Image (cartoon, rainbow, N blue to C red; front, side, top):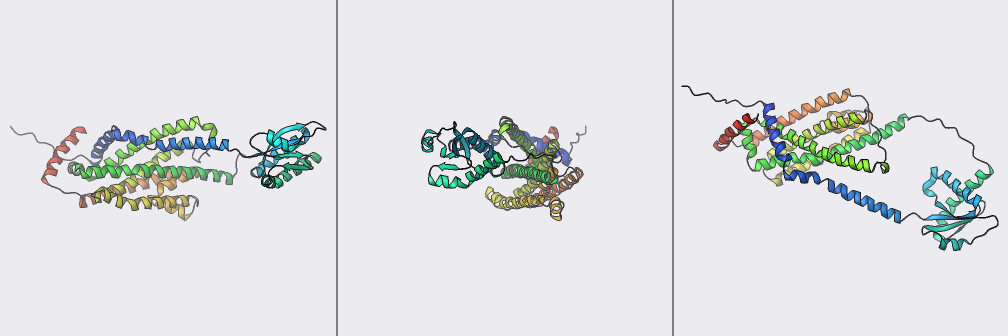
Length: 414
């Protein structure tokens, strides 16, 4: 009887990469360290929220000193109205007015007594009339307020003697300059968030590879499946883990945003709309992560210890910071050769194109950018895998034997 022939061929690169990705994803997702990894960025947010609340309480306690008004009722109201009108243009220069007492016709009052009997944040008293105002209080304070009070009094007298003309208003929804300015802020915020997430999460690829390289797992994997599959699998597994982390942090951030929405400023809507910007943000995060992760994999293939990893990865981190500055500067030069260069350079392309999505509504350039960045990801992963095979792999009988056992496990898992 003939013995049954056992399959000896390897899996395809895509199938093997899927097996590696599934292995790494489940191993990391259900580990205890991943839970603490999710909690890590939330602590600075909690500290910042507490610090902001404390700062607001201190600000309320240390309220700006105000100017108390003790005048005839008509004069006091005229001064308050004049101050409110001027506040639209020079509000930061004018003192806040608080009417302490509206005098009846013929009634008088001692301003010095009003300082002691007034509120705690009243620094000086304004008495007399708009035509002849009198400031009473500490010398440094009344000298500081002399000119602003004179401006308010002149406004009150002018309006009383000759009312201001009614101005007709014809509003527009927006203007080109205003629209560009607000969208530039949205583009800058999206670009910065993309950079922070990429730098914070891409390091997981490097640490995972160094750990498996130290305990020889990477060599066993490479003996069982193509090295390209190992690199692709690890990259996409870590990308999936990163999306899980972003989803968790995003849910917490959305809850905080919903709770504090009335106190938060409005964010200008991007040119492509919020749903499309979020979709493009996810795509460009994936591209930026895969591009940087492929470089980190190549670094991990050359490093034998954690110290060597830190030494080799530091220049890459600094270069990525320069790339971010390059993309940020290119964002301020729309349509220029500089912006085109930033969009073509693979490592700055995701940041540049995401900023473009916030400023320009056209979508075809994003499709071309996705194809361009994907080609660079494939090229860099293949180069990193080739470098690993050339410099780090040490074939031997034990490795081949272990690789044969793992190869059979990979086939059964697939």
